[in-house]
Amino acid sequence: MQQKKGQKGFSLIELLIVVAIIGIIAAIAIPNLLASRRAANEASAISSLRTIGTAENTYSSTLGSGSYTSLANLATSQLIDTSVSGATSASPKSGYFYGTQNAGAAGFQSAAARVSDNTGTRNFSSDQAGVIYGMTSAAGTLDYTTTSGKAIGN
Image 1 (cartoon, rainbow, N blue to C red):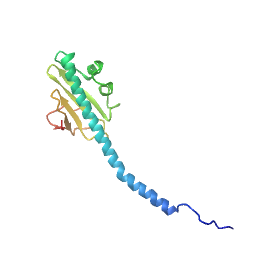
Image 2: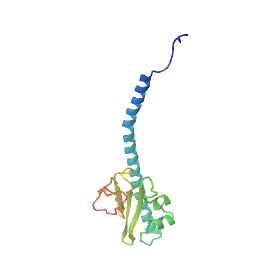
Image 3: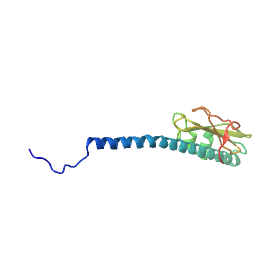
Image 4: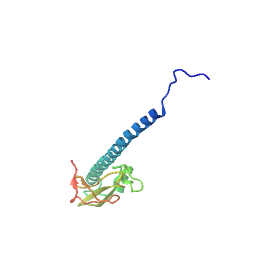
């Protein structure tokens, strides 16, 4: 029987150590990645609410004769994208869905709700004044209140 000289390769212990190190790095990185994704979803929701507010003001001054309108009418008038107006809890845009209420001559209220706590930590609302508020209301619920939330840095 011949002995092989200069065998090359990794021992089982060395491979297990490398796998353990990769596992530790993944355990540290994954929560940070998920937190970054939630922050990105929230930033997208805030941006979409700003877009809705701008579209409402445009509609009011051009097509609405001083009145505001629904998300569906904003999309029909091509003032917002259908990804925002058509977002629902079943098919959200970046983990959020949107709604408006009380749209008329006196103003409007808009809201963005997270689908679950995995997609964001806050819901958002706004009105014709354009200030966006962050609230810790339940996931999946459109909360149009602008008096109890904390104003987002506008």
